[in-house]
Image (tube, chains in turn purple, orange):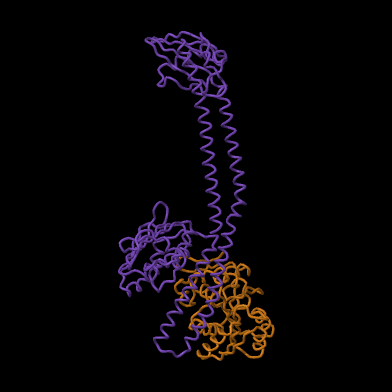
Length: 402
Length: 212
């Protein structure tokens, strides 16, 4: 249990670290690309306004800056921009306005301009790192394409460095978390070990007095009603220590051997000895098994969980007890329902805690020892499942998913 | 039966002594291992019940010294920690059966009579494997392994029938399925140690014996 808690702690910490890194990197890199695109749009806008080439100094005096992306542009912009501009008339005639680029030949640039006419977006990216803008007039379209490769390169570098840095950072966090988590759960582990040892020792110490009482009871000549009462208490104590033993065994279980099982068949086989007991208590027993219920699990654990659910129903059901076994979304679902006296409404998951008793509720009757459903919880947790208990309109509902 | 009980808890010792006397046995009770050994070597007992953690001389040592003197009564070892049973069974060299505390009086009384009955059974064999009920062992050639009553019963029944229903085994041996599963594992481990190519396998409703 402690090891599971530790693993969960590491997983959630790592998830938080990844979420944080993802958020920070997304903001940095997306902002970076948006600003580069914004600068490019500013330049292409100016170009189309000037008819496709820089006839006037750009940016104009007073608007020059030039260091951070998205801010005022460099006074060198009109000299350093690599671009070409063409007009394409409706009949397909292409006319060169400017050609200041070396990556494409003039013919290739002309072809690119022609292909961009009619594009849905008036601005956008083409050939990976080229930003274009279209300006439509009456019979012609001005196409301006600028190279942003040099401006995008630092952005890609930031992206690559930040990704590598994040991976290294996450590995470092993981390496730190392994020993740190061990230290963090150490007090819990110590407390858990002490608790288990206490239960084991207490159970062991109780075993001898029970055996003595049982042996004495056999040879004593008490009144029949007193002897009967003694035997009932001895059986109850015996069941309690057996349950505590089971609880400790399941809590310590590390390796689980699983096999393909027919859960409905096991449920039916396990409930067989209880049918007569339910009948004796005049409790209507209803079984619902859906087909198929083939499932990979541990038979002993499954049977023990079912037995504890039936025992619970047998003790507390007033007039009916229903059990259903089905498969849903690749999980085995076992549900029980029974009516009982003075049942609180809503979430009753605390009934799965050791020795927890609902006030005037489902497990406060004197026959129970408060351990049965704790065994169910241990089994379900060990098998990686879920459990739930609720009360509504006097009906106690239990659901376990494996 | 003439019984010797060796148990350090005085109350349990007295209670068991009274119970067994009440059950028609001749029971003698001692609370330490040295006294127990002394009584065992001189008392001609049919069975010995050992408690946990006997003072001065351990139960294993008592059995070992008694065996050297040719004394081999029925032996029952009481235990209380459920999680220890697996290792108790696989490492067992001396005890004919283990009984978990707490137990009901009738469990002990019926165990004693069934052990007495089983001890009288003739030796059984299946191929190279021999089951010897007089000292609760099963052997192959010169090698032998100590078994408990449950282990020997299971092995014998399976070698005869090939298959035993779990329900029947539980009723006859008065054991839970989990406890019987541990006996099955223990038998398989001992068969492997003896080099016997047979194994007991569990299905959902039965035990079966198959060639490994």
